[in-house]
Image 1 (cartoon, protein in one colour):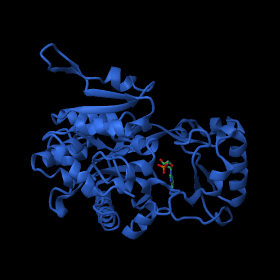
Image 2 (tube, rainbow, N blue to C red; image 1 turned 30 degrees about the vertical axis):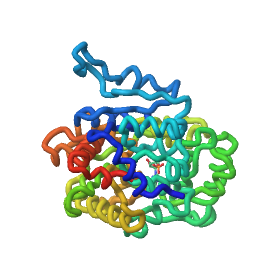
Image 3 (spheres, rainbow, N blue to C red; image 1 turned 180 degrees about the vertical axis):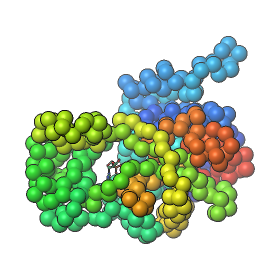
Image 4 (tube, helix red, strand yellow; image 1 turned 60 degrees about the horizontal axis):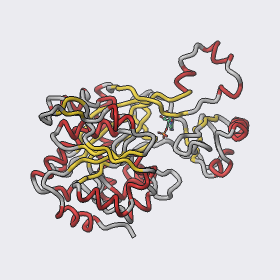
Length: 385
Ligand code: AMP
């Protein structure tokens, strides 16, 4: 049984007036920690042993003898043998006692089972707990359904390999690195068969995943990931903000496109099928006349999410799009929480966020600002589930 929001709101009664900001140590944790301390809050990063040095050593808060921050933004590091252990009853108790509000990221929803998050994790989450599951393409109730309800353009689904009639992208997990992608493209059923055989033989994809893969039209156009924020603390007409835009660097796709055509053709047959492992991000702005449409899809997403998963989107979310030759965004993926590319504007802010706030405004900082305002106004229950 999913935990009722009212149960979570009751937990807040025992929270201190100024809560701490917690997040899982991966993905966007530095942005969240930086934003927390920029807003005068304490940051707590939950790490897994063996992959904690970034937070425990390199971004750890160092103080001078008088206690003033000398360097760093990770105030506390709580280390666990496995990320999933952060959801044990003892850990939950410790998080509540410390007054931690958890900012969910993809590491949290990947390493802690979704059923545990929904039904057992009794710690307030800054955002919409019920919407984390819609990212799973294998779920029936996934983001494609929400986009359709909202009337937001998404790539056309292709029902079977035989129906491939144009360039298509086949979406399934990587066979060994389960959190990575085993995506490939195909323009015909024949190409689908040849490529899938090669990738199965290579061990990049697994037969069972292939049988359940989503096949959709490939949208020709550059990727723009729109990092939005929605605040329920202000009138609805002021709630939606565009903070920044990022794009991804994917290996080995980006390595390949940096090669001149002649050298691409020299690659061995197996190296010619690119993988889409995200290894970094870049920052972008968008042609100004396109922004109008971007805000429209943001508003439509917020409205549809409120109707279908009340209370809907709270705080940060990301719509990942390709912009076609008419400048129209097609949403191919959704993060109903902080996106994975917000470190591009960490600490320095982003042109859009800064233009709104007249000073550095990153996603991490915006989240912390919301927490600070909600805490001061006694409205924390409106931003957590
Ligand atoms: P995702 O796992 O959905 O975030 O997608 C990973 C990458 O695949 C994206 O960054 C895009 O480069 C690419 N991609 C995904 N879906 C599409 C699509 N329908 N058309 C074109 N490129 C896509």
